[in-house]
Length: 103
Image (cartoon, rainbow, N blue to C red; front, top):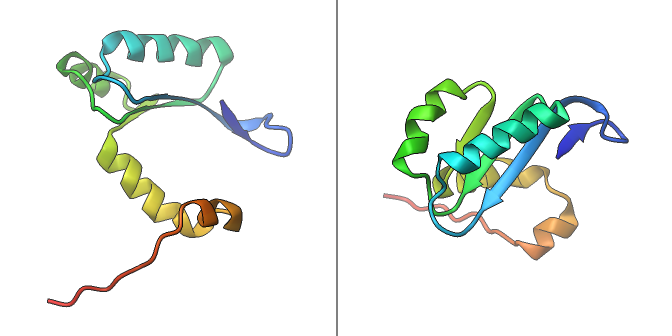
């Protein structure tokens, strides 16, 4: 769970679930959807390093505005996109260096 504000009471509120084992199926999406409703979160994010099973891909269309699905590609893209905003302490744990490649 994450939310804006000093105490985390402001909107938007987001419920995040991260899976690193096998590909995620519809059961995990359904549980996250239920948790979002139970805690009255505005949005959900389901991250799966191993991707998603076929059953979840169809349901994704119905949940698009409520739950976003990230696989490896999306996670890395978003991390790199927002890396410059991270605290220096976090950057020191995950140091990155930009390299320019000319063709």
